Image 1 (cartoon, helix red, strand yellow):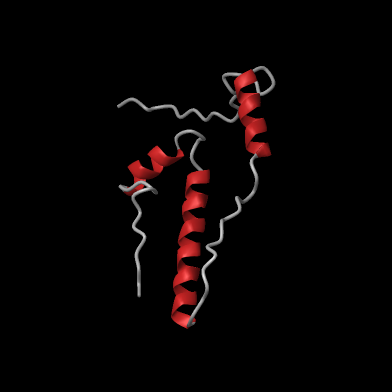
Image 2 (cartoon, rainbow, N blue to C red):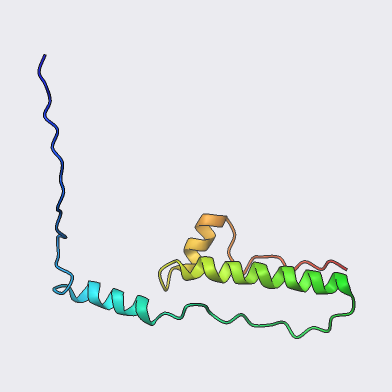
Length: 99
């Protein structure tokens, strides 16, 4: 039988140097300029009781999570990639009335 030699790569270089690619530099700058968190619009509804407050809080949490998920996708493709991943676009999400 033949013995196979194992080779270990310890130092790898990028195909394109970090300072030589204008596209990579633009991508890095756009990521650095992106705000850490996007503000969530607050629904201006009057809270009547504890149940309504909990429903409003749940809706706000869902909306914040959707915004976080969409922020991880590239600009211009956020809605489409969200719809592909979760099977529903944000425009189609139901406005459920719990009353």
